[in-house]
Length: 64
Image 1 (tube, one colour):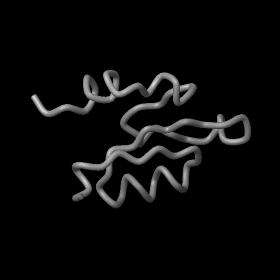
Image 2 (cartoon, helix red, strand yellow):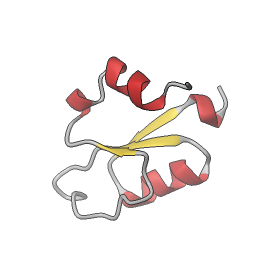
Image 3 (cartoon, one colour):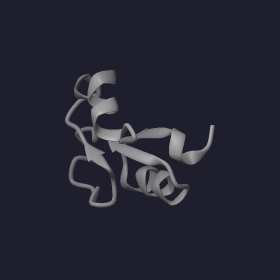
Image 4 (tube, helix red, strand yellow):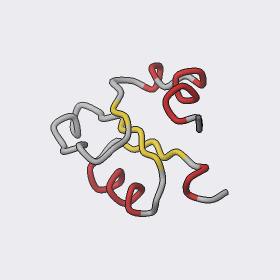
């Protein structure tokens, strides 16, 4: 799997930034401790993994 084919799910600024720098698409799922971290670099920020359903991920990241 190459980076463009992968999606990282991260809950912290440092983890999401590392994944982004590695070329992955990044979904941020902050927890109560990391909710105020800067996630401006991620592709999608969700409040819960329940929002990141397969249909939602395909709609957001599928190639045209």
